[in-house]
Image (cartoon, rainbow, N blue to C red):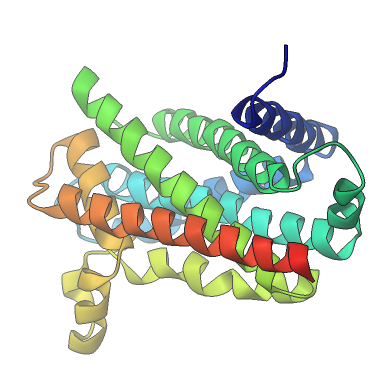
Length: 257
């Protein structure tokens, strides 16, 4: 029985996802970095700066959503480097000569990156609980947290796939991820935006990370959410769709080169 193109797309995508997962566990440095860096940031802010920052609540409860976003962003940024390595290292050309859809390469990176981020985020949650984080979220709230974090991770994964396809070297891919990774530091992740200068406060309030962090904070510890949930879905839903379309367009152009 002849199998459909959809079947082979799923099958090839799963094959390349398994490849990405094997890389994660055979070379665990990237997973350890995706966990170790946010844990170090969280411990430093809680125990070094936390006593001097007034947030209206226990600082560890305030800072955990921002640390989770930082963790997921850093893990996703590694995809740009991996995609560039595959493009300049000849894997893309190799796939052309094999009975495998070259586009499955992108699916593999996105799926593998999502699983790596899910593992790292879970570890961050447990470390946060050990140092005093006390969420009061109910079952529906936790579903909301998982749904928003999944949307955030998939949108960033496709965004960094596009970065990896565009850049010509691993060094350039690494540098191109910095602007996105810097955004949590000029949001409400670590300090209230009201404490920032007027010009910076306006940027911090209206960039995409702040509504996401405020929504996660509201779901986890019960602070007001307002319209931040809808803004989060609008920001990262749009980023997901645009990044996917741009990645596919760049990929098709490279196939014709």
